[in-house]
Image (cartoon, rainbow over all chains, first blue to last red; front, side):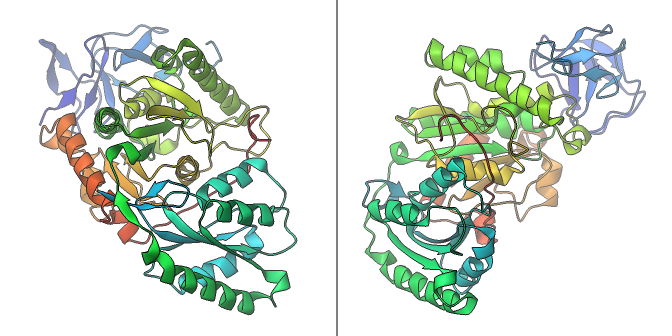
Length: 90
Length: 389
């Protein structure tokens, strides 16, 4: 069983397929990514640095944008991204 | 496969008697009537409201003439606004058995229960008279709903159902997906999939309408449970939800109770038109299942990650769960373990073929897990649609 799944080549997050531990090193697209947080099953971690305001991509499509800079290996969730529909910007 | 031929030409996969109440005040009598027939497939449905509502009356008409329904016992208190005679006439005109009991004109609770029990008993005796005829995939209509989504839903259970839809449509079936409020973020993709540019524009506007409606309600269709399960935003949830629809063109947009004119894939708009009047578009997944059944769905594929246990009146529910931990935790409730995609490397084809095999058996009479457990959840509330006045 894989440790994670990256759903599309364009994504900057991957989804944990088991409970992952802070400090674990995972190989993502041939590059090592060190986890800065525990990542629970089903939760996302950053695979490529996301600057504040940039879109977060999953399934190759935006699922929201970063509310602060997110480092590689960080947990990507409600504490650092928000919906692009939050402020009726669409 | 075989189905039950109704006099209006429709074919059902179940041969049910339904007891329906027309206001909450008549619910108890209806339930007590059905309780006397625990093993005979007697289902209770109804509308709890006393004030009139065109949407609710339309949904009730469609459910009482659903292909899986053979006969209907209507229980009215007597002073509610529901047009009971029109419903009775409508059901009879469809060729189905129908009887009306008005509690206020029938001596109250106990005599009404007795009368209802007699009516159901007479209908059950006539069930074997319904002709069994060939039932092909082109006769089948399947709906899908997701409930208790988590991060697994979007790459296990939901795309498996999408693959089921693609394969069923290739065999001539009709498939229905829904809930624009859980497709916010997918409207551009849906516009591209409309069978015509007009349908594409309708789909786009429908999702935008849902976004505006939910914003006015002050709460979107994103729950705390979704977040615990790893979903972070409504778009995150929506993109996973959207994969239930498969890849075929979307042939049309329906409103609750509309029946599609052809086969293929259709979308159901469940978010009311106009300003919010009566609260949340769908207070629970059961309300959405009721609306899909009202469109004629013979059965429902219900995907879950967190683990729903609900079934439904009238249309059997097949549970497809994509979270292997949930499948392990609720083995008595889950029909299809799509979590094998994560644990065993199963493919979407593996899960979709297993699901289609089960659908064939359920059409043939095999009970789904929720059916066998006696789940018959039902919820119908107030709504307003421009097309339903």
